[in-house]
Image (cartoon, rainbow, N blue to C red; front, side, top):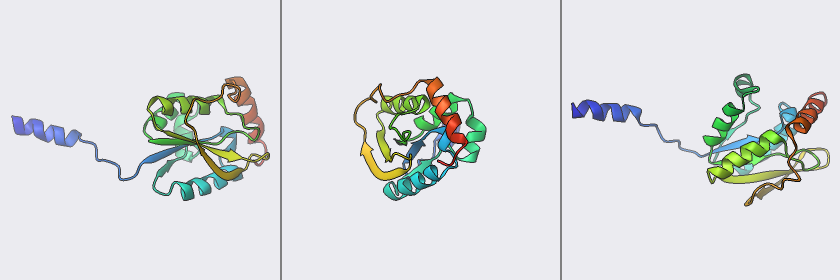
Length: 154
């Protein structure tokens, strides 16, 4: 009987990942945009040892649209997070929630800086403290910005 339990325990073991995961939090309005492509190029170069979780990938969009618990679970499965703010440096409500989730699990958090047009500059800053509340948008304001950005090439 003990060998049966040992077999069950072995079957329940999770195969360890070889590489850590980095979650890329960015405004929905940038999904599929030039800014997203450029950001991913920078992230893949800067964090070459990580598997990148991009919530803008088609399968995540299909599974997660409107489901914040889905995205929170993706963040919880990562060891680090990098976020892309809006062009004026403001941070969307969803991104702020994802950052808080990563902070609670004591993961590494980074900001990928953007220029005035919202394009990534390549500058990556480690974030050691909580987000400045003056930078965080409400859900309504975040939604307005994402809706406006969806109609143009960001």
